[in-house]
View (cartoon, rainbow, N blue to C red):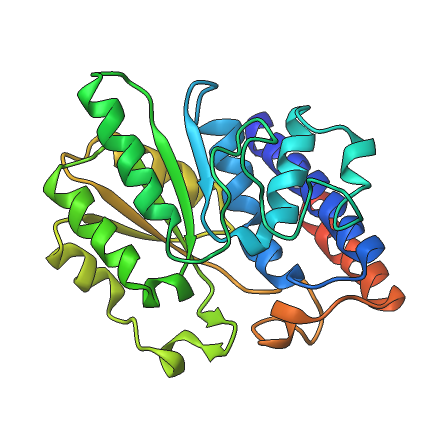
Length: 267
């Protein structure tokens, strides 16, 4: 294993351990949503985007993962992290606007992140800059019409400076995505709309590296479908709607801390 890969595993572990502690101390939910996106956030921030790029976490209910990533980067302090979900905090359940570096928009009203990214992408294209916009959406928010308007817009303007990663954990607030509103074959639909599409394991850093290379050679907007597990490592809660809402008890928290460290100890 390369030193870089080992570094990603360490950072991913740090980010997960921090946000699990945040959730536990706040006694709140959306744990599963953060566990499905942790590796994606880790890789994008620490091996893909540069400081001038933007990142939009459209699935704002996974805000704890975003805040933890920002703490790992040194933007947020551990003292600030400790205020998560508290009174008078700006580290709320969904990311705020104009409060934190690298959080350009308030998100969490699902279906808006990709539209915001598309607008930023067009602005940078007009300005002829090299700036990239990274947008991480859930799969459930593909139920929203505003997302499909953004897809049309991205393809029409050929905004290759927008990198769209879909956290495809196949669960949303009301059940399995295919039961609530069928998305598959998602790859074929996006190709029909004018995208290049790559489907990967969203927990695999090698696969994410391949996705990074894939975008460099594409002449169309790219959608990266990241197959993930909602509630990954959470015993008996993986792939359940409950992990979208439930908080952790002491035993679950301690077991999760052990589980998330296992990939690091194997190396």
